[in-house]
Length: 461
Image 1 (spheres, rainbow, N blue to C red):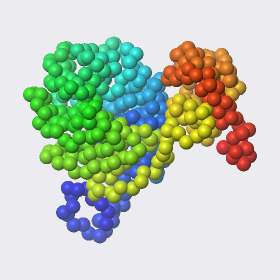
Image 2 (cartoon, rainbow, N blue to C red):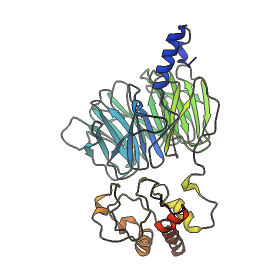
Image 3 (cartoon, one colour):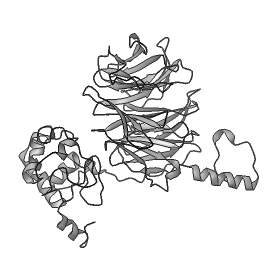
């Protein structure tokens, strides 16, 4: 008999009805992993109808997954390409739209029918880690490392912020709207949780200062309480009116990086830098389940529509699904470990530098696909900005040089901000001549089409 939701076990079905429900339920399930991103995944959120998933990644993209289009682990998600750096967070909007924020500081509104950019709100240069959408879908608040939060009115003709929420003494890491939407609540590295008036942008008060940086916030269904997560691993519930910590939950050993609430508000979850996910009853705050991901931090969490499973993301290029109830026994996660950027057991210093500096963004083979950057296969002798199938920045499309030993060495000597100003490449420099020479020598060997062909038995694949 197939598994039914926790709260609907009492009703007995006929065999035929049960089998039909099992078949329908199986078709509706999300797979245990979703493969499509080309870099570590930063966030994940489920649409209100439970049929679409929105994820963001270090690969500069957001992906929209439709449950009806998934076959096994593979799907053809809608790819939203337009940011110039890692995309950190996103939300669905009314009208078949979505909104995302990035290390490039910008806020982008997307048309999910076409995948095109509807509107881009330029930031102030510092990364934006998270966002929230007001209950009516009209306003978007973003948490910026400019020591401020900003609120944008999506119906206003101007691209300037509706309000800039200052008074922070450190990076703003999280932002949420109050349950009614009249206030905006912020969490800062300075330890403060603050409340601002949406209409005017005025600071109403600092609700509490927790001493340690606050990384995550969720407004609970009662509208008067906040679930919060702190850099010292603390998770708790705060009374918004009094600022009192009414409940302290079992602590993580490393910073809290993500929080989630189930669609019905009855379950809550926390994810930490320690790789631990804890699931709570959001009414009694009893710890229901705990999951240890041995392969790294939990950057994002989202419950499925029935709250029986949790999507979680981190250093992997995949989105994973953990079955919470009935509790699935722990099985080793089918991921590559150590990851490509965690290589240490090599005698080749150039390979080590590639793993550390380049492998998150680039592959070396023609079938490796593009990540945040294009594959480097055959890069020597190639004109900059000319690999088919990769969405280059205008700076590289307009570049007039060839990639060779000197230009690649210069890239890591002076930095991409000097060699390819305006490109999407993050600043990566190697000050040591020996390190640069070793990296260039490794790249020349590893990306040579003739050598790759010989290694693969005469086929460049």
